Length: 491
Image 1 (cartoon, helix red, strand yellow):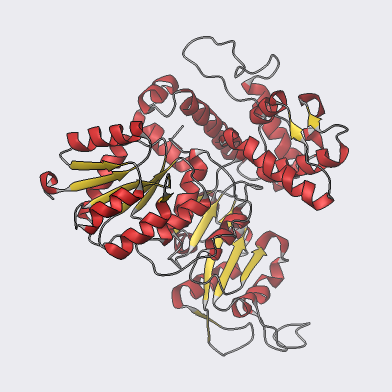
Image 2 (tube, rainbow, N blue to C red):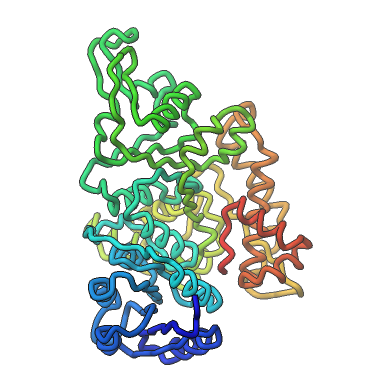
């Protein structure tokens, strides 16, 4: 690609954004034309000018998504990069559905933009789609944090795909909501969505539930029964807590993923498995493989598209949005005026460890809507002990700085790292007998490392050199550990 002969068209009503893009792209060797609205850009396009478009979504005189649709009609081969300060699942899916090459949220990394422009111009097959999509089914997936923006972007990119997805995330983060969103924007959206929790089915019934059985296949099989694979034909089968699936059922599932067919228990008829599989887990499946509890070949069959749902404590900036949403939902449900948190209460909520994640926050708000005596809720009314998580103890954020700090981020007296680790261990013993706990050393180390790295990355605003220096680690080691832990660099 000869950059000297490529012209980039930029549409954004923000003069500072236009200036930054113009400067960086011209320094990279591109010609640049800028516009404050989509109408002027379209006039330019109709004369056959420009090789790539970078457009905002919200501009005077029309939406960038409508502009994108028109652009792909006029110049279907032209790559379009969408940028926005309003990164939502609706916008992400809308951008990819209309044929965007890429979708980025503001503030963006200017080096990333320049590299992306180069890749887009090298590509002869930008994303395109002629399908419409139901844009109203987003199921309460809310967030403006970088981690959630990345999640929205990934869901948007999956809109035209039927590939198998493995969703990773702690309990209560909303893995089923994500699975439903993927289904709702997929080619199978008009088919059924079936959610099955592997941990909730007796082990001896899992295969029958999934694949069905013939009459007389086993004691109690008094008639033929179709399983979820048959009943979810042309739809999406969501296998939650896949790490709890028995080994026998894992073997059967692997064969289905390999061959696309199955038989009912006790039967001989070969049935085509016309379903898309989305699986989810809160467990560390590589560890389960090492301990012999999960098949390695099945893991790789499921992990075609890995998708990480961030914990609530890793995105505290989303807590006010979630609170507004849950207060409005409960208000409508019980026909009562919504309540709200004081700024001081929000600060406490953002510092809390949220072991139960979004589900715990939702339960807290439901409880306060009924029990709180006033419309305004202060920090003294926050009762975390009533949540659905046993032995909940707030784990304070680690204050790792290069010099002493007395600001609000510093843990209060009596809440040391040791206190947090002890609270973590106590929670595990409170939720299970000691004989039922496996790999506690590894579990605790991973959680402590995740909290430590997350706090340092937040402190350094994602600066890898500074973070590695504070931690005393090689930068490549830090990058690998963060990748293994599913941490986002973009703080």
